[in-house]
Image (cartoon, rainbow, N blue to C red; front, side, top):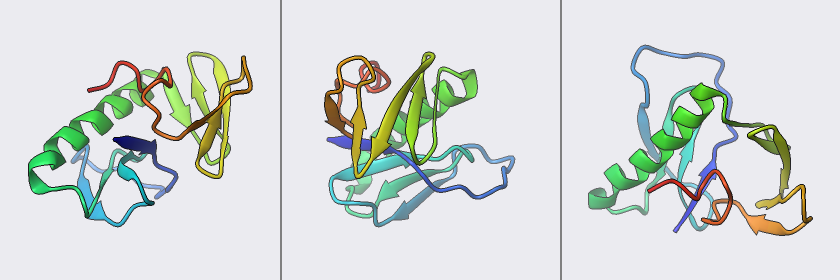
Length: 113
């Protein structure tokens, strides 16, 4: 199961935190947490799994609100470290090892449901 921090910027925030939108995401991606408070869930996710995926993404958004983790198109910034990202991969700044976005062994994924 793979999750990806979203890359879309919208430039607005609304009072309804965590609006959930169903849309076609990249292959293998079930959900994306966007920094505007919205969540995307892939159209292929069965209805009985939408809540699970949304909860996982809400945990990412909590980390973003706390300043623990944030991202842009070029990197994930987690606990003071810059993890370069591109072409669906994220690179460990300490080892140079590349991980597929959403890999459960990434430190910001490890404690999520």
